[in-house]
Length: 326
Image 1: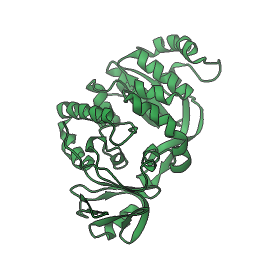
Image 2: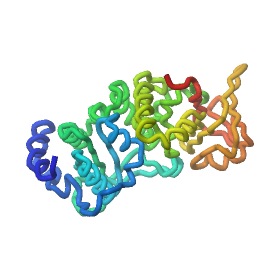
Image 3: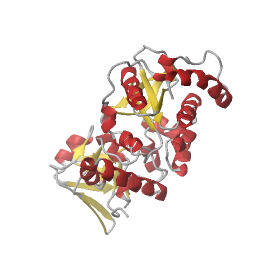
């Protein structure tokens, strides 16, 4: 669908669906579809898991975020490949978490988008124009659960996200993973199927783009296995390393970082839980990095979290070694 067609159709479409009021957002081509006019032969997002899944038609729609130039170029790249793409009706400032490797789970300073501001925006892209326009309306009205379904997330997980959002925003800067684990109690969690490991995203590895309703959610495991099959067919070069990291134990500190331990082993015996690992293979962010380096290949679960390198962290040792894919 061309920018001209979108500008003509969307005001009535959005007004009927969302009760859009005149003047709330700009509905011109530059604001809706981006300002990028350069070459679109490639884009950094094209090598990300989510974009590859959309191109393989294993995922119905892409959602990405970044500065206006980045999302405008991504929209142009998607349009050149037969997709419809729309930028979010608002712009914002990302709230970065250095303890999570610079990842951002929340935003601040949300305001109506203005073309040319250079601010951060979101972008939606899909082969179905109606799906993109519905997704844009969900962004406009804050319908996170409905947007999750449009993005292809399991309905149980899409419903759980807004239910946990206020707690996540209040306690962990929008990290819904921390809010989910808080319901399990501190310390050891698992064992879980590795395909649902959402925590490795903070280190650049993922099979799924949503926060599961539970780390053992069957619908999430099925979705992750389908994604894995698509990646093996369309991008086999990234699968081996991703599986190695996703199938590793995770140390997740509520406010202090995340670490994964490829090749590590979690042992639970006699009321004790211990992780042994190769320090050379460990990956960590934030305050966990020096603690992992001092841990000499051993982390113990405590009553309120885990101990690494002489430092105790409120958090969880999560075992993702339950099973291989089916």
